[in-house]
Length: 365
Image (cartoon, rainbow, N blue to C red; front, side, top):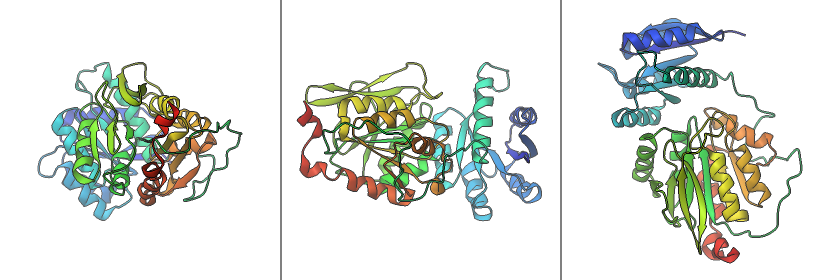
């Protein structure tokens, strides 16, 4: 199998050296070249024909946003992995670069030059994302086709019970910010159920993601606060580094946050949210698993299915990385596979029955 050729674009000599060493020590990767500026990097794309471009978000002359837009015009399908600092400015620029067409991002450890313990975690995350963007870690049991119901390979013990939607659950990872913007653009501002969302992101990023979705769609999206009551028409994003669960509180539901062990190497994890929602809302759950790397969401989706809820997944063709929705299909619990362009309207129609059907949660109390 041919090696994945990686072009590194960063104005820091130290970062270029560290990334070059990481690439050199993995047998599946090959350094296609390095560049100290975005303009030189774009020239080297023409010369070296890389499979993945790794680029700093903040550089002199041309920043990551401008460079991403320019690369997209010339190479619309070339994966771009942004390297971001864990600062408010770094998070903001990264989200803007993703909106401009970047594929994913990886957060630089603060002590990348000092051999800090976080460097190993960064190395693992970096390699996994490069390989995923190059298509090396995607293993689906069968092609995901738009609008095709997934037949479960094993029977699901579905419980009969409530059928009126009570909550909309969304899980996403790699490629998620752009996918979420597309989905939320089709949701009405007066959705009759609350939306609970897990996007794999570190602190700061999740708050800025919520602000960006609020500013660009009709839905009011906020980073979830421990103990707050969920309300229809509102969307709550799990904060970076915190799992989000829901619990009954009389006739209502509250959000709780915790820092228990990561699941599927993630905190927040989609499985954690889906599992708790299945217990609280039962058959009132409508869930969607969007683009992402790994298998987070598959186990939680099975619990939703067994509670009588509904699970939709994004189709492979529109995913940046289709592993997460593919894992749900492999588990045999996807009710429907939907294109990204159709997902927002599909989910809005799915939960619209709650407007006239009453509260499933209240009826179950």
